[in-house]
Length: 184
Image (cartoon, rainbow, N blue to C red):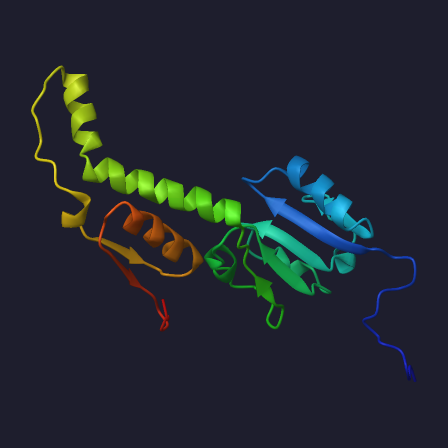
């Protein structure tokens, strides 16, 4: 009998291991930072998994279906993005493994800036003017004030609220929708 010992405990001398898998983020940027912050962590870059049983954590963006299930001792899944749909769509996603989404102030700012840019391009009819420019034509378009152009945001979590605040600061009336109640 193995009394007093945890059968899933890491054998002495075997470091914690994290698997990094992303088709868009650069392991060259992530690995040095993770190693600097957690020198005891062994960072493995997919497809160089090594022994799958040694992987404790997975830091991923759009992992192949079944990849996470192939890691029998996985303790935590970290999404490289604010969303987790790319992970939840895996029919073999391991049950009872916590899933964490990334909320980063720089990513929030970048996403909000993109949303503001897109709204302003539509509001100021930039695409119509670009098409006219390509055609060598000019036809002035009616320009509304921001206050006359309501903006709806579907999904009013961290990103949606930040974008809403920035659009409101520009004078747009903003309405947000969320699956759950929010006190804003």
